[in-house]
Image 1 (tube, protein in one colour):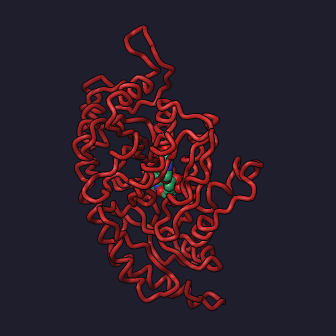
Image 2: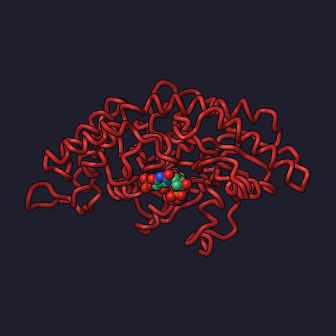
Image 3: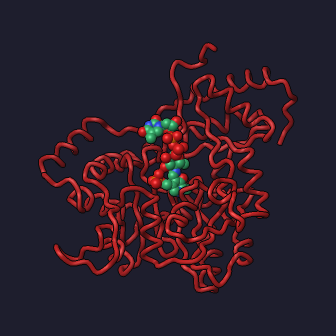
Length: 380
Ligand code: T4K
């Protein structure tokens, strides 16, 4: 088939920052002869993130999945932890990797966030924490979650992988609960290639996390904690320092692209784009749409055939993936909203690869899809 576009568009295509500046920073790393173990680049990045988010401590790590595991260990989580079923599988796996059982809670239809009204019935004597996810960079219902956590003596942490640069009201995410974990993966709005950070206002927790990130060493020959190697390299931090300077302009660009999708696709009743109209600020990292489940997969296939790599994040839902789906304790779950969203969701590309005229072209491609699709597309 002749491709509609000359190049391929990816969901998650990195926004590469100024190349000369990146290479110059890499050169500094080489001159420093300091490549890892909390060197000057990591320290500077942590300092700048603390300033940017207005949080007391930022502990950079090698990726968010390891960051989640490190945090769960530092807080001594055990037994069961309640998480949303609608999230990337790393949220669940980070727990199970440490033999903690994720307990899946359903989400809200309107914003895909964990539904606080469904949490209390899932709490058992084995529950040690709630780990919520500000999905698509939308703030969670922090006061409701904190109230439940306090009432039941649970820790409250956030897998904020999507939410760097987002605000709830006038507060940047990064200061809620006991701690939050961000992802700086290549596909994220702010990136260090691979990487992530744990942010917290607790001095004690931050101190423990810093030690545990580096094998538990307190001095050359002494450890006082079990630890692992979760360190970020100096090259990753150097890239991050350049990227951070460009973050606000990337978010501005994403915002315009998001608005172009809303405007261009407005005429299609059956395809609805999420509008980030919450009180606060979005990073517009994900362009999320919902489409009748009977045609969602055909749309994805059609667009892929034309070089537009739409994604079905997070189909089919964590509870429908191994090792959870086959395990008896996850049988008979009623997670109807998670299942509805995962069967209808489709993510469109954004970031610097996208320009407004390309969104207009995508609209034409969508019209062609509708014309070629044999079924009558009804509104959702
Ligand atoms: N919690 C949540 C809620 C998360 O969403 C994530 C990660 C995590 C925790 C864990 O964070 P990390 O441990 O990764 O820091 C991607 C990302 O790998 C993952 O970080 C992200 N969430 C997830 C939502 O998406 P895949 O399997 O979809 O990625 P992949 O390899 O298909 O790449 C996406 C697209 O980007 C492809 O079309 C190729 C393109 N791409 C990718 C890379 C890496 C590029 O053009 N350049 C690149 O360098 O998971």
